[in-house]
Length: 408
Image (cartoon, rainbow, N blue to C red; front, side, top):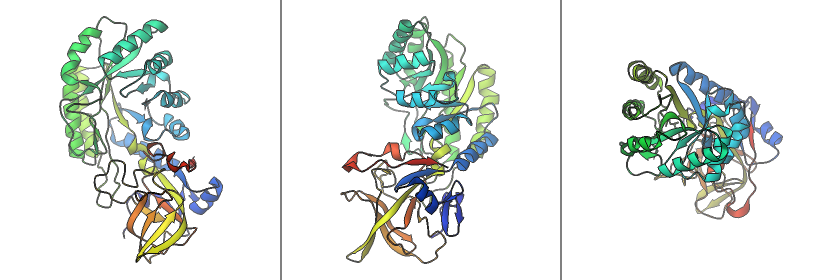
């Protein structure tokens, strides 16, 4: 079985995977327990640098903290990107603890409570309004605090983006204000005490098709330019979302972002800059920045054969890596890239299934996968674990300990 391209991003030292330049067996001893998550700082830095080289120089890059809110990762990225996007008061606190100024932090997501909005207004972050009710609450918070809130309006576009793993725009949505309702809402807010910056639109995530992303960017820009005609204040902020995907499965092709960068440059030069000269364009990415930098490491605690099928039972499972088990958005379950981290160069293969320690048949991390002959004590590695891993999993299920995370 050929190595997945994301596996090849990591170094191998004497038959052992290395994360952040540290052999996995040694890293496991340093952490002191399995299972654990490990994230490679170099891979994150390299990914941001590559994006900078492809995207237009005046495009601002935002990190969507929900992809991986580990404080060390957010701290690291705060020194590399232009802004941070949060989706809860807790994520906002994490972002405010970094070097990123509050004015470069945005707060999006439906269902923000009045308490969260008061915190956001007091902090001075940009609140991306999701409804008219939320807008009224923001105005009330600003009045109570004597602060003019910084706001943008999240738009639910009147089209869907094909090829996205998760559609978050077009049709009825809990996200944002329907595009056709935006002019009316802007008129209602025109005389209120809000510092209106501009718009945010995010139509879908996990897209591997550059042609579809280019088309979505063009349609987003066309829509926002039309809506900008209803604004009283100059538009200074255009968050065009992101949705850049990473290859999880064997037949996935990595996203070619060169055409995306070229299309963005064309849109800025020919459409945005002539119409909205004060607008700063933002691309907001989470998974694409951190997803391929992380691994989930779990130890084999039992090897058993049941009616001719070999099972490797590990001390981790879906309570830490729900996505890898196929229970987080997969319609048809497919295996994430998987390896035996301390036997990376072995050529011999056997067919096994890797299962977790939970008392449910859903706890399946690798179904009939080809791996080197594996023994109790060997380290199983699940790749593509840098985004939507630990915090997107049911860690309290069956009461097992929460695994450590390390950035190396």
